[in-house]
Image (cartoon, rainbow over the protein chains, first blue to last red):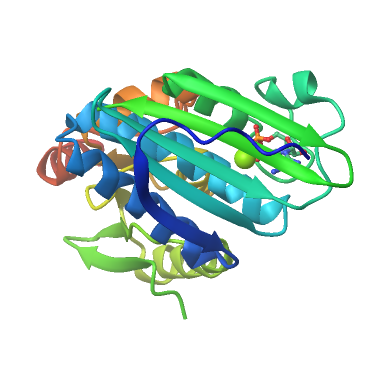
Length: 138
Length: 118
Ligand SMILES: Nc1ncnc2c1ncn2[C@@H]1O[C@H](COP(=O)(O)OP(=O)(O)O)[C@@H](O)[C@H]1O
Ligand SMILES: [Mg+2]
């Protein structure tokens, strides 16, 4: 899988998601990054909800993930990269559709997360893993 | 035993307070305990309190819908209270409208409505 070029800004936090409690811990870190930029509640809520969807996917489907949070103070943006080394996604377009799930979820995580953020990109290679980059403006 | 939600009998109403860090392994246990306690106590209704939640993602949204489903199965009117405005707005964008869940502005309102339905 190709490595994404680093987002603008400076490193804020780096976390590993290996168990369910890490999903909570990691999304709290994203909330702190938004607080650092003085984000309004609605903007903070949108980004934290979106990353919660992506982090849980990284754990449940990716078998664990690594999270990198970057703070762009000039542009008032929080960037979040979530990378896993799971099975990857065969059909990204299908996976993004509301209601599509291969698990026991509602199938609204990927589509919903995309609607909630300023920037959303997803890269996946079968047998190698999945990489999601999101950003929200404070 | 689940640490991620509390069950309290208030005024013959079963109050379910969901915690921020509720996780997958707590859910079945919570459903069991709720069904059992509503049955044992003959509670007149269920109120699900989400005021502790800074966000509700599709994972927690599904839990809320499932808990409300238990209320329906047990013929126990169920209300959702305490949802923060930013959380409600975000849920709409996730496409989660929770059609089966009645909402009340706060616990007091929910209790009043449940009394009125008797
Ligand atoms: N990190 C990932 N690795 C592998 N598959 C994934 C990943 N994220 C999502 N998927 C696939 O995309 C589907 C849709 O994801 P999502 O929209 O979050 O819904 P849900 O989590 O409810 O299934 C999942 O069921 C799964 O098949
Ligand atoms: Mg999901």
